[in-house]
Image (cartoon, rainbow, N blue to C red; front, top):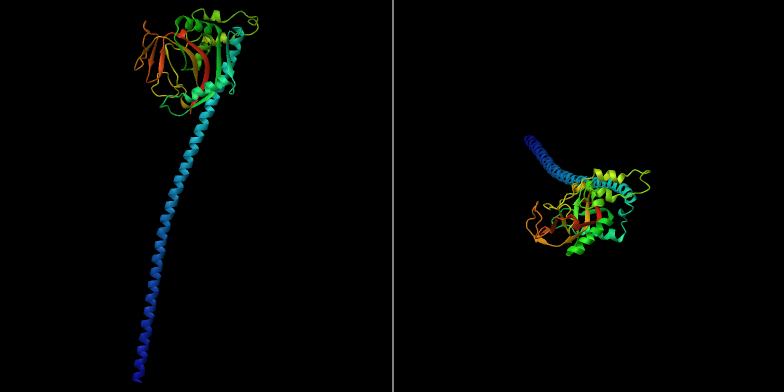
Length: 307
C-alpha cells in the first residue's frame, strides 16, 4: 500500500509538472505572438506615416500647380481686358482722326493673318533681348499712315543720307494719340491746325480726335530705340512695359534715320546732342539714343504683354 501511495504521489507530481510546463509554453507562445503583433503595429504605423507624407507632398504640388494656372489665367484675362479697352479707344480715335484729317492721317488695325501683322508679331516675339524673363505675347498690330510726317521724313533722308533702320521703342498708351497724329516731334504750336482740315462734317459730328489729342501728352524725347523689343529686360534704358507681367504696353516699330553716331558705354541718360553726332549707340545694350525727332517715322503699333 505504501508503494502504491508513493506511486500515486509521483504521478500526481509529474502531472503537476507537465501542467506547469504546458502553461509556461502557452505563456511563451502568447508573449511571442504579442511581440510579433507589436512589431507589425510599429511597421504599420511607419508605413502609414510615410504614405501620409507622400500624399501631402503630392497634394501640395497639385495645389501649387493649380494656383499657378489660375494666376496665369487671371493675368491673361487682365491683359485681354486691358487690350480690349485700348483697342476700343484706338478704334474710336482712328475713326474720328481719319474723318477730320481727310485720311491724311490714318490708323488701321491689321488682321492677324495680314503679312505685315505676321512680320511685326514675329519681330516682337523673337527679337527679345538676352536675359529677359518670360516670353512676349502679341495682342494686336496697328498700322500708322501719316502722309505729312512721311513726306518730311523722306525729305530728311534725301538731304542727310545715312541708313534707315527698323527699331522698336516702348510707349505708354496715353502717348499714342499724339504719336499717331504728330510723331515724336509734336508738330509745333500750329500742328492741330495743320492736321485737321475743313470738312462738311464739322457742324454735325463732334471732333473726338481733337479732344483726345488735347488730353494726350507728348512722348518724351530724346528716347532710346532698339532692334530688340526690350520687353521685361532689367536695366534696359528703353524701359520695360509699365504694366508688368499682367499689363499691356505698346511698342512702336519705327523707321529711324541713322547718320552720325557716337559709340558710348554706358548710355548716358541725359547726353546732349553734339555737332559731331545726332545719335548715340550702346553696343552692349544694342540701343540707339536719338536726339532729332524728325529722323523717326512711326509705322506700326504693337500691343504686347509679358508672360
